[in-house]
Image (cartoon, rainbow, N blue to C red; front, top):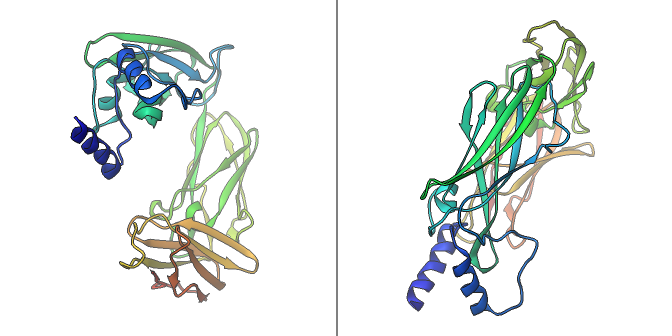
Length: 344
């Protein structure tokens, strides 16, 4: 038994699995007794009953929530199923519960995403679910169900969401003159919508061509403006766009700017070890800067206007350093690539 417990803990640490699932109250009582009476974290919700439970906690159910959007994000808490499962698989495998939703007004349905944490005494806790549910004009009666995957028992919770008006989207792109997408993550650039509704909008990444979309817009007049968020001097053409929503989506609200790609790699060595991913790379100029994590391959990239910049990688672990510690580059009507750093 001791060897099996040692192997069990080893599995958790090696595979970074967050789960022991589907304990009943008898097992919980025995484990607490064996560990002593102190140290129980009362801020988490430990599973102490058999069978699934479900609750809708967002949005609040009273008063009836209302939105003009074409969908609504809902979420809440869930219990655990019966039986025992350890230590691999999906959250559904670990918890023994499947969470689904159905819009009874439209007949549409789907499966919710689930999340769970490993809490004191190696119990699963804080089992939550979340989903986006499409809506139609009027009242939408949404039923959420938690089903025990072993026994088939189920529990439900219901919410009615009102959609008082039709709504539409406005979309476009932020791109350089060379048609490189100016994504928020590579530049810090965003957009602000004003007029009959106010929204802050984040354009997609460079790999998705800097696309953006404003949603939940009712008929009316609007202005959309790219903003630099105090990073660098991006000059967009046009500086802003005015548009009117008249019972239809509004596409092709495009902007362009003179900017170029700066890219490189973070390379690892045996000396420092650890994963390539997770380090931050900062680009700065004239007292302004923008930072972002590079991807799991070690590749990083920015899209910036002409100017002189300092590129500085920041290690996750302070015991590690980079060679070189930073690079000074000049962007002059062309991209700059090959700005690599070695973690050591």
